[in-house]
Image 1: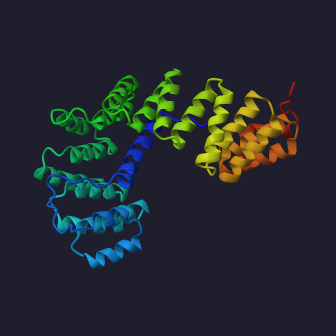
Image 2 (image 1 turned 90 degrees about the vertical axis):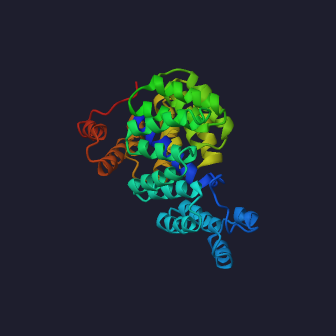
Image 3 (image 1 turned 135 degrees about the vertical axis):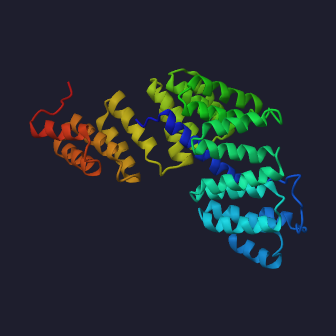
Length: 356
Protein backbone atom coordinates (compact mmCIF):
# COMPACT_ATOMS: atom_id res chain seq x y z
CA UNK A 1 0.00 0.00 0.00
CA UNK A 2 0.99 3.64 -0.24
CA UNK A 3 3.51 4.61 2.43
CA UNK A 4 4.82 8.06 3.38
CA UNK A 5 8.07 9.02 5.06
CA UNK A 6 8.61 11.88 7.44
CA UNK A 7 9.79 14.24 4.68
CA UNK A 8 6.62 13.62 2.70
CA UNK A 9 4.62 14.12 5.88
CA UNK A 10 6.20 17.51 6.37
CA UNK A 11 5.66 18.68 2.81
CA UNK A 12 2.03 17.62 2.92
CA UNK A 13 1.52 19.37 6.24
CA UNK A 14 3.16 22.55 5.08
CA UNK A 15 1.17 22.91 1.89
CA UNK A 16 -2.06 22.11 3.72
CA UNK A 17 -1.11 24.81 6.16
CA UNK A 18 -0.30 27.30 3.43
CA UNK A 19 -3.32 26.47 1.29
CA UNK A 20 -5.62 26.63 4.28
CA UNK A 21 -4.30 30.06 5.14
CA UNK A 22 -4.68 31.35 1.61
CA UNK A 23 -8.06 29.97 0.81
CA UNK A 24 -9.99 29.75 4.04
CA UNK A 25 -8.72 32.21 6.61
CA UNK A 26 -10.14 35.69 6.07
CA UNK A 27 -7.80 38.63 6.31
CA UNK A 28 -7.72 39.80 9.89
CA UNK A 29 -8.42 43.37 10.94
CA UNK A 30 -5.19 44.57 12.47
CA UNK A 31 -4.84 47.39 14.94
CA UNK A 32 -2.40 48.85 12.47
CA UNK A 33 -4.97 49.03 9.70
CA UNK A 34 -6.06 52.53 8.83
CA UNK A 35 -9.58 51.48 7.89
CA UNK A 36 -9.75 54.07 5.13
CA UNK A 37 -12.26 53.82 2.35
CA UNK A 38 -13.99 50.80 3.90
CA UNK A 39 -17.47 52.31 3.60
CA UNK A 40 -20.42 50.12 4.54
CA UNK A 41 -19.68 47.27 2.16
CA UNK A 42 -18.35 44.71 4.68
CA UNK A 43 -21.34 42.38 4.36
CA UNK A 44 -21.28 42.66 0.57
CA UNK A 45 -17.55 41.90 0.54
CA UNK A 46 -18.01 38.89 2.81
CA UNK A 47 -20.71 37.48 0.58
CA UNK A 48 -18.95 38.12 -2.71
CA UNK A 49 -17.35 34.94 -3.99
CA UNK A 50 -17.78 35.62 -7.69
CA UNK A 51 -15.13 37.44 -9.68
CA UNK A 52 -17.71 39.15 -11.85
CA UNK A 53 -19.56 40.49 -8.81
CA UNK A 54 -16.32 41.82 -7.36
CA UNK A 55 -15.36 43.42 -10.66
CA UNK A 56 -18.63 45.31 -10.53
CA UNK A 57 -18.15 46.31 -6.89
CA UNK A 58 -14.61 47.52 -7.61
CA UNK A 59 -15.88 49.71 -10.43
CA UNK A 60 -18.35 51.23 -7.97
CA UNK A 61 -15.80 51.49 -5.12
CA UNK A 62 -12.36 51.79 -6.74
CA UNK A 63 -10.77 53.09 -3.53
CA UNK A 64 -11.84 50.20 -1.30
CA UNK A 65 -8.76 48.02 -0.62
CA UNK A 66 -10.79 45.21 0.92
CA UNK A 67 -12.48 44.60 -2.41
CA UNK A 68 -9.10 44.09 -4.10
CA UNK A 69 -7.93 41.87 -1.22
CA UNK A 70 -11.08 39.78 -1.53
CA UNK A 71 -10.66 39.41 -5.26
CA UNK A 72 -7.02 38.46 -4.70
CA UNK A 73 -8.09 35.61 -2.39
CA UNK A 74 -10.54 34.32 -4.98
CA UNK A 75 -7.91 34.52 -7.70
CA UNK A 76 -5.54 32.57 -5.45
CA UNK A 77 -8.21 29.93 -4.85
CA UNK A 78 -8.31 29.51 -8.64
CA UNK A 79 -4.49 29.33 -8.74
CA UNK A 80 -4.29 32.64 -10.60
CA UNK A 81 -1.45 33.77 -8.38
CA UNK A 82 -0.12 36.56 -10.57
CA UNK A 83 -3.57 38.16 -10.67
CA UNK A 84 -3.81 37.68 -6.94
CA UNK A 85 -0.48 39.47 -6.52
CA UNK A 86 -1.66 42.33 -8.75
CA UNK A 87 -4.78 42.83 -6.64
CA UNK A 88 -3.10 42.58 -3.25
CA UNK A 89 -0.43 45.04 -4.42
CA UNK A 90 -3.19 47.52 -5.25
CA UNK A 91 -4.74 46.95 -1.82
CA UNK A 92 -1.39 47.61 -0.16
CA UNK A 93 -0.91 50.84 -2.08
CA UNK A 94 -4.26 52.03 -0.72
CA UNK A 95 -3.70 50.76 2.81
CA UNK A 96 -0.07 50.06 3.66
CA UNK A 97 -0.90 49.81 7.37
CA UNK A 98 -2.79 46.52 7.14
CA UNK A 99 -0.48 43.63 8.12
CA UNK A 100 -3.01 41.10 6.84
CA UNK A 101 -2.38 42.34 3.31
CA UNK A 102 1.36 41.70 3.70
CA UNK A 103 0.62 38.17 4.90
CA UNK A 104 -1.63 37.52 1.90
CA UNK A 105 0.95 38.97 -0.46
CA UNK A 106 3.60 36.66 1.01
CA UNK A 107 1.37 33.63 0.44
CA UNK A 108 0.79 34.54 -3.20
CA UNK A 109 4.53 35.05 -3.67
CA UNK A 110 5.16 31.57 -2.26
CA UNK A 111 2.71 29.95 -4.64
CA UNK A 112 4.25 31.95 -7.49
CA UNK A 113 7.67 30.51 -6.64
CA UNK A 114 9.05 33.75 -5.21
CA UNK A 115 9.86 32.99 -1.54
CA UNK A 116 12.51 35.70 -1.31
CA UNK A 117 9.98 38.33 -2.33
CA UNK A 118 7.65 36.93 0.31
CA UNK A 119 10.30 37.30 2.98
CA UNK A 120 11.18 40.81 1.83
CA UNK A 121 7.59 42.01 2.13
CA UNK A 122 7.07 40.47 5.57
CA UNK A 123 10.33 41.90 6.90
CA UNK A 124 9.28 45.34 5.65
CA UNK A 125 5.97 44.90 7.49
CA UNK A 126 7.75 43.88 10.71
CA UNK A 127 9.70 47.13 10.68
CA UNK A 128 6.36 48.89 11.05
CA UNK A 129 4.72 46.29 13.30
CA UNK A 130 7.58 44.50 15.11
CA UNK A 131 5.33 42.46 17.41
CA UNK A 132 2.68 41.36 14.94
CA UNK A 133 2.48 37.62 15.55
CA UNK A 134 0.53 36.88 12.35
CA UNK A 135 3.35 38.35 10.29
CA UNK A 136 6.03 36.66 12.39
CA UNK A 137 4.37 33.26 12.07
CA UNK A 138 4.06 33.63 8.31
CA UNK A 139 7.73 34.57 8.06
CA UNK A 140 8.66 31.54 10.17
CA UNK A 141 6.58 29.34 7.83
CA UNK A 142 8.47 30.65 4.83
CA UNK A 143 11.86 30.07 6.45
CA UNK A 144 10.69 26.55 7.22
CA UNK A 145 9.55 26.05 3.62
CA UNK A 146 13.00 27.17 2.46
CA UNK A 147 14.65 24.81 4.98
CA UNK A 148 16.09 27.76 6.88
CA UNK A 149 15.40 26.10 10.19
CA UNK A 150 17.61 28.27 12.40
CA UNK A 151 15.92 31.44 11.20
CA UNK A 152 12.50 29.91 11.69
CA UNK A 153 13.37 28.87 15.25
CA UNK A 154 14.63 32.37 16.09
CA UNK A 155 11.34 33.93 14.99
CA UNK A 156 9.27 31.34 16.85
CA UNK A 157 11.28 31.95 20.02
CA UNK A 158 10.74 35.70 19.60
CA UNK A 159 6.97 35.12 19.50
CA UNK A 160 6.85 33.23 22.80
CA UNK A 161 7.24 36.30 25.08
CA UNK A 162 4.51 38.06 23.08
CA UNK A 163 1.96 35.23 23.14
CA UNK A 164 2.93 31.69 24.09
CA UNK A 165 -0.64 30.39 23.66
CA UNK A 166 -0.53 30.35 19.87
CA UNK A 167 -0.76 26.75 18.76
CA UNK A 168 0.93 27.46 15.46
CA UNK A 169 4.21 28.19 17.25
CA UNK A 170 4.41 24.62 18.45
CA UNK A 171 3.01 23.18 15.23
CA UNK A 172 5.79 24.79 13.22
CA UNK A 173 8.33 23.63 15.79
CA UNK A 174 6.94 20.13 15.31
CA UNK A 175 7.42 20.35 11.55
CA UNK A 176 10.99 21.52 12.07
CA UNK A 177 11.59 18.54 14.34
CA UNK A 178 10.21 16.21 11.66
CA UNK A 179 12.53 17.71 9.09
CA UNK A 180 15.40 16.92 11.44
CA UNK A 181 14.21 13.34 12.03
CA UNK A 182 13.26 14.06 15.63
CA UNK A 183 9.91 12.28 15.83
CA UNK A 184 9.85 12.44 19.64
CA UNK A 185 10.28 16.20 19.65
CA UNK A 186 7.75 16.55 16.86
CA UNK A 187 5.14 14.52 18.75
CA UNK A 188 5.72 16.60 21.87
CA UNK A 189 5.22 19.84 19.95
CA UNK A 190 2.09 18.60 18.20
CA UNK A 191 0.66 17.58 21.58
CA UNK A 192 1.44 21.05 22.93
CA UNK A 193 -0.29 22.52 19.88
CA UNK A 194 -3.40 20.54 20.77
CA UNK A 195 -3.24 21.61 24.41
CA UNK A 196 -3.04 25.25 23.37
CA UNK A 197 -5.66 24.96 20.61
CA UNK A 198 -7.81 21.82 20.95
CA UNK A 199 -9.38 22.40 17.52
CA UNK A 200 -6.04 22.41 15.64
CA UNK A 201 -6.90 19.71 13.10
CA UNK A 202 -3.48 19.43 11.42
CA UNK A 203 -1.73 18.75 14.74
CA UNK A 204 -3.89 15.67 15.34
CA UNK A 205 -3.13 14.38 11.85
CA UNK A 206 0.61 14.87 12.18
CA UNK A 207 0.72 13.33 15.65
CA UNK A 208 -1.28 10.40 14.30
CA UNK A 209 1.21 9.88 11.48
CA UNK A 210 4.10 9.82 13.93
CA UNK A 211 2.48 7.22 16.16
CA UNK A 212 1.41 5.22 13.10
CA UNK A 213 5.06 5.04 12.02
CA UNK A 214 5.84 3.72 15.50
CA UNK A 215 3.02 1.13 15.25
CA UNK A 216 1.41 2.67 18.31
CA UNK A 217 -2.38 2.50 18.58
CA UNK A 218 -2.39 6.08 19.86
CA UNK A 219 -2.45 6.87 16.15
CA UNK A 220 -6.07 5.74 16.06
CA UNK A 221 -7.04 8.21 18.78
CA UNK A 222 -5.35 11.11 17.00
CA UNK A 223 -6.84 10.33 13.60
CA UNK A 224 -10.30 9.93 15.11
CA UNK A 225 -9.94 13.28 16.88
CA UNK A 226 -9.02 14.87 13.55
CA UNK A 227 -12.10 13.28 11.98
CA UNK A 228 -14.26 14.62 14.80
CA UNK A 229 -13.07 18.10 13.81
CA UNK A 230 -13.35 17.53 10.06
CA UNK A 231 -15.62 14.53 9.36
CA UNK A 232 -15.17 14.89 5.60
CA UNK A 233 -11.36 14.96 5.73
CA UNK A 234 -9.85 12.69 3.09
CA UNK A 235 -6.43 12.78 4.72
CA UNK A 236 -7.47 11.81 8.25
CA UNK A 237 -9.77 9.03 7.11
CA UNK A 238 -7.24 7.65 4.64
CA UNK A 239 -4.50 7.65 7.27
CA UNK A 240 -6.81 5.93 9.75
CA UNK A 241 -7.78 3.34 7.16
CA UNK A 242 -4.12 2.75 6.33
CA UNK A 243 -3.26 2.25 9.98
CA UNK A 244 -6.13 -0.18 10.43
CA UNK A 245 -5.03 -2.07 7.32
CA UNK A 246 -1.39 -2.27 8.35
CA UNK A 247 -2.33 -3.64 11.76
CA UNK A 248 -4.92 -6.19 10.79
CA UNK A 249 -8.14 -4.28 11.52
CA UNK A 250 -9.46 -5.10 8.09
CA UNK A 251 -13.17 -4.44 8.60
CA UNK A 252 -12.40 -1.03 10.08
CA UNK A 253 -10.02 -0.25 7.21
CA UNK A 254 -12.64 -1.16 4.63
CA UNK A 255 -15.19 1.04 6.39
CA UNK A 256 -12.87 4.06 6.16
CA UNK A 257 -12.05 3.47 2.49
CA UNK A 258 -15.71 2.92 1.63
CA UNK A 259 -16.67 6.11 3.44
CA UNK A 260 -14.08 8.07 1.45
CA UNK A 261 -15.35 6.63 -1.83
CA UNK A 262 -19.03 7.17 -1.09
CA UNK A 263 -18.95 10.47 0.85
CA UNK A 264 -15.71 12.37 0.28
CA UNK A 265 -13.86 11.79 -2.99
CA UNK A 266 -14.76 9.00 -5.38
CA UNK A 267 -12.04 10.05 -7.82
CA UNK A 268 -9.00 9.24 -5.69
CA UNK A 269 -7.46 5.91 -6.77
CA UNK A 270 -5.80 4.97 -3.48
CA UNK A 271 -8.82 3.78 -1.46
CA UNK A 272 -9.74 1.46 -4.35
CA UNK A 273 -6.15 0.24 -4.54
CA UNK A 274 -6.03 -0.52 -0.84
CA UNK A 275 -9.34 -2.34 -0.98
CA UNK A 276 -7.86 -4.48 -3.74
CA UNK A 277 -4.74 -5.08 -1.68
CA UNK A 278 -6.85 -6.33 1.24
CA UNK A 279 -8.76 -8.72 -1.03
CA UNK A 280 -5.56 -10.01 -2.63
CA UNK A 281 -3.21 -10.31 0.35
CA UNK A 282 -5.45 -10.95 3.32
CA UNK A 283 -8.58 -12.55 1.91
CA UNK A 284 -7.12 -14.30 -1.15
CA UNK A 285 -10.21 -13.29 -3.11
CA UNK A 286 -8.45 -12.67 -6.40
CA UNK A 287 -11.46 -11.88 -8.64
CA UNK A 288 -12.61 -9.26 -6.13
CA UNK A 289 -9.07 -7.89 -5.90
CA UNK A 290 -9.08 -7.53 -9.70
CA UNK A 291 -12.32 -5.55 -9.50
CA UNK A 292 -10.87 -3.09 -6.99
CA UNK A 293 -7.53 -2.67 -8.80
CA UNK A 294 -9.49 -2.06 -12.01
CA UNK A 295 -11.36 0.76 -10.29
CA UNK A 296 -8.05 2.25 -9.14
CA UNK A 297 -6.76 2.10 -12.72
CA UNK A 298 -9.95 3.73 -13.98
CA UNK A 299 -9.20 6.69 -11.70
CA UNK A 300 -5.48 6.83 -12.45
CA UNK A 301 -4.48 5.24 -15.74
CA UNK A 302 -0.74 5.53 -15.06
CA UNK A 303 -0.93 3.86 -11.64
CA UNK A 304 1.85 1.32 -12.21
CA UNK A 305 1.41 -0.40 -8.84
CA UNK A 306 -2.28 -0.98 -9.53
CA UNK A 307 -1.50 -2.51 -12.92
CA UNK A 308 1.11 -4.75 -11.32
CA UNK A 309 -1.11 -5.92 -8.48
CA UNK A 310 -4.02 -6.56 -10.82
CA UNK A 311 -1.63 -8.64 -12.88
CA UNK A 312 -0.46 -10.47 -9.77
CA UNK A 313 -4.09 -11.15 -8.81
CA UNK A 314 -4.67 -12.57 -12.29
CA UNK A 315 -1.54 -14.72 -11.96
CA UNK A 316 -2.65 -16.08 -8.59
CA UNK A 317 -6.05 -16.82 -10.14
CA UNK A 318 -4.42 -18.71 -13.01
CA UNK A 319 -5.26 -16.15 -15.72
CA UNK A 320 -1.73 -15.90 -17.05
CA UNK A 321 -2.35 -14.09 -20.33
CA UNK A 322 -4.14 -11.26 -18.55
CA UNK A 323 -1.47 -11.21 -15.87
CA UNK A 324 1.30 -10.82 -18.44
CA UNK A 325 -0.59 -8.02 -20.20
CA UNK A 326 -0.86 -6.10 -16.93
CA UNK A 327 2.79 -6.69 -16.03
CA UNK A 328 3.75 -5.37 -19.46
CA UNK A 329 1.59 -2.29 -18.96
CA UNK A 330 3.20 -1.66 -15.57
CA UNK A 331 6.66 -1.71 -17.18
CA UNK A 332 5.51 0.66 -19.91
CA UNK A 333 4.53 3.15 -17.22
CA UNK A 334 7.54 2.43 -15.02
CA UNK A 335 10.29 0.79 -17.11
CA UNK A 336 12.40 -0.25 -14.13
CA UNK A 337 9.71 -2.16 -12.24
CA UNK A 338 11.49 -5.28 -10.91
CA UNK A 339 8.39 -7.10 -9.65
CA UNK A 340 6.56 -6.69 -12.95
CA UNK A 341 9.63 -7.84 -14.88
CA UNK A 342 9.94 -10.90 -12.64
CA UNK A 343 6.26 -11.61 -13.14
CA UNK A 344 6.62 -11.63 -16.93
CA UNK A 345 9.71 -13.83 -16.68
CA UNK A 346 7.91 -16.33 -14.46
CA UNK A 347 5.10 -16.68 -16.97
CA UNK A 348 7.49 -16.90 -19.95
CA UNK A 349 9.47 -19.62 -18.18
CA UNK A 350 6.34 -21.55 -17.32
CA UNK A 351 6.84 -21.07 -13.61
CA UNK A 352 3.89 -18.92 -12.48
CA UNK A 353 2.97 -18.74 -8.83
CA UNK A 354 0.27 -21.26 -8.13
CA UNK A 355 -2.27 -21.29 -5.32
CA UNK A 356 -1.77 -24.22 -3.03
